[in-house]
Image (tube, rainbow, N blue to C red; front, side, top):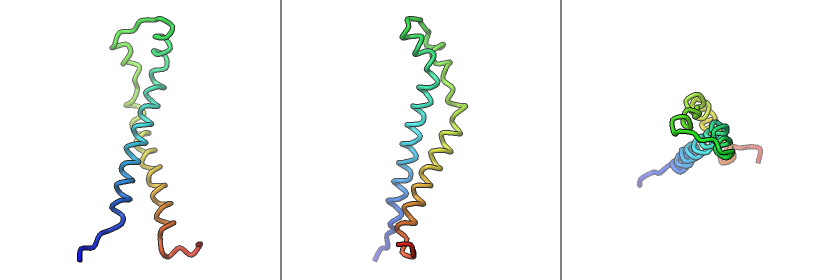
Amino acid sequence: MKQTFKLNTNWKNFIVKILLSMTIMTLGFTLISLYIPLKGLISGKSYTLVEFLSYLELRKYLAIIIAVSIAMSVRELRKKTTLISPNNENV
């Protein structure tokens, strides 16, 4: 009989949560970086595409985005595994 591990679904969820949090954080940092040109566009100032994209600073925040996303997912995975573990005496 083939033995299957329950952790496979946890790893899939883990990776999906990392990618989802990275996407959300990237969108957040993009909006923060583009605040000044967006405010200028709303007020009527014209920007070229190069000027507009020059405000993006995602390289600076890339390490933070990756580290925080992984840390959040690891923390959530640890919480779930400690709640599921059969040797948990605090039940």
